Image 1: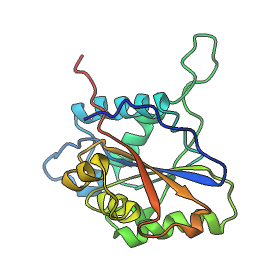
Image 2 (image 1 turned 135 degrees about the horizontal axis):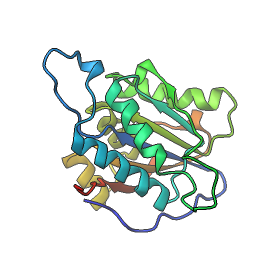
Image 3 (image 1 turned 90 degrees about the vertical axis):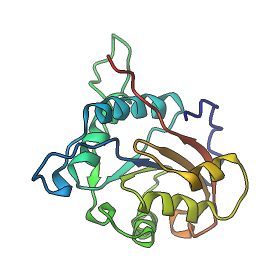
Image 4 (image 1 turned 135 degrees about the vertical axis):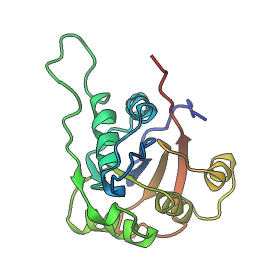
Length: 196
């Protein structure tokens, strides 16, 4: 499932929360959960996620990422696709570095919401925020924020939030005002890389 519909620009007074689940991970024997790397498919899908984010104008001004290896690798590969692709560019990729937030590693949705609230309390003028984390917590966050609204996107998010899934939610007001049922789910996509 890839949503190729154009996203509307952000209206004045709105913020955009982008939620990215890590791409498919590997399961090497004897490796602790936090140190599991991406599988080859996961590496392709993380790159595809970066292309989707760029193509839909979801360039974050702040990134919070779980410290697990698979989430860090997902962000790094996605971020490489967010930079200026022109041959004359001196940019080697997106200049944004993630802040590794331990609360994004298998925390409850309430703890993820608290991380978002802190962006507002710090006085940051962040209009687009990206969270890179895990399921089921990210799916619970998306469903909780989008509330009980109707629509195909919300129904799809209820059914499944697979690896490399991206949800885009628009939020009215400050990050501190974000609460359950107060956001609008604008896009849901699961970009997949092509085996080369």
